Every structure is written in structure tokens, then in C-alpha cells.
Image (tube, rainbow, N blue to C red; front, side, top):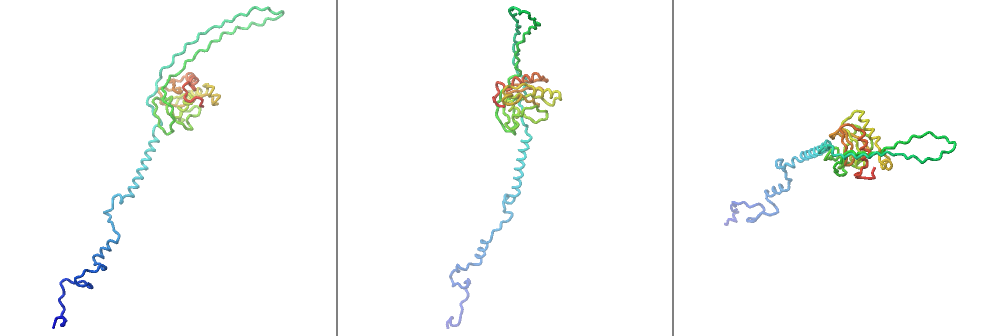
Length: 299
């Protein structure tokens, strides 16, 4: 009897054959092994990044953003404070009196002699009138010395009111100045506490004005005398008829001077240690709308 007939089963192979697969064949591709299914599940699941692997910028970006905003606001505040506390102007040097023009030679006084008229026949029965006195000869007007001295011209550019201007000398008689509602200044006398700057009144000089400047806070009598000069100085024909102004003279405080008083026109200055109202008024009448007036026919 053969083994087959006896129901003999051959011994199991040492290498088990997967169920459903013939011996010696490879596993079907439609049924992946359990290890492959686990790998597939891992690849489809979202990847979790550990906190340790997060970058510094990603982790602290909110705090960094706040820091940048704070630094930016601080920088803007610093710029604002510097502009607010910056000096409105600076003076490189202080002007000292320069050479003045020599006094003009006085004109000779010529006495006028009256010539007696020819004798005429007296009318009959006329009464001789009382003898009239012979008029005295009038003296010829003497030339007046031109007061002050020439100052260097530094130009006439216009700048904004927040510009800090550096003047080569003070008090300035030219150079860059403001162009706004308060430049040029309205004609009047400005007291010690009025806020006026050279950038304002240099524009007045450009328009043919004379500035009477004083240092510090003079007493009431001195201020009154300075104001009188500003009020009583004669104006030019142009200022009175074309501009409707009694004159082009203003008075104001300016401390950066070597003397206590000064009279200024475009490119010309008169510096006085003590108050001399007569000289200030003469300068004002001589140098309104002077020959070097840079903007003629402007009020």
C-alpha cells in the first residue's frame, strides 16, 4: 500500500507557507504585510513637531514684534525731542564795530548881502511906512554823516520755520530767513518778552526795513525812548504812499550782541554801547530802503 492510500501526510516544511498562497509563490500585492500597513498609517498622520525643534524667531516672534515697535516709537520720540530742544539759531561770532565813513566836509556859510534898490521919487503926500528889518541870511544845510558800517552779505535764501540757522556773525544783517505769516514781522515795537527770532526780522531787512535792537530787559524809560524812535522816524515816499506805513522801522530784543543797542539794515549795522536815540533815528531815516535793498518796491 502506498503512502497515499494510507492517508499519509508528508511532514510540515520547516518554512511555513502563508495561508492562501501556493507553495513557493510570493505573497499577493493586494494584501500588504502588517509592517507595511503601519508605515502607511504613519505617513498619512500629521507630523507633530516637538517644542525643542521650533526655531527661535518662530517661538519669540510676538515678543520680537513688540520690541521692534517700542524701539521705533523711542526713536521717533528722540527725534522729536531733539528738534524741540534744538537751538533756533547759533552765532559763529559776534559782530564788532567796523570802520565808519568819514564825516563830510561842512559847506562854507556864505553871507548874503542885500542890494539897496535905486532911489525912487517919493509920491506926493504919502506917509513913509515903518522901516522893515533886513532878513538875516539863512545858513545852507550841512551834509549829514552816513552812520554805521558795511557788513558782509551772506545771501537771502528762504527756509522753513523749524530750521535751525547758523549765522556767521550776530547780529545778522542778511542770510537765510523764514518765509511765513510772521516773516516779515508786522511793523511795531516788540517788548522783551515777545518771541521773535532773527529768521523773522531778517525778512524785514530784505523788504527795506531798519531794525532797532536792544539787549536784555532795559528799564521802562529806555524802552519808551526806543519805542519813540520806532514811532517818530520818518519814512520814505514809497513806504508812506505805496505801502501806507509811517515808516519801515521795528524795534525788538536781541541778546547776542557785543553792545547793548544796535540799528540794522540790509548789509549795514550801527553798534552803540549806550543809548543814543538821535543816532538810532538818523540811521533809521538814512537806511530805510537803502541802495542795496534786495527786494525793491516790496512793502
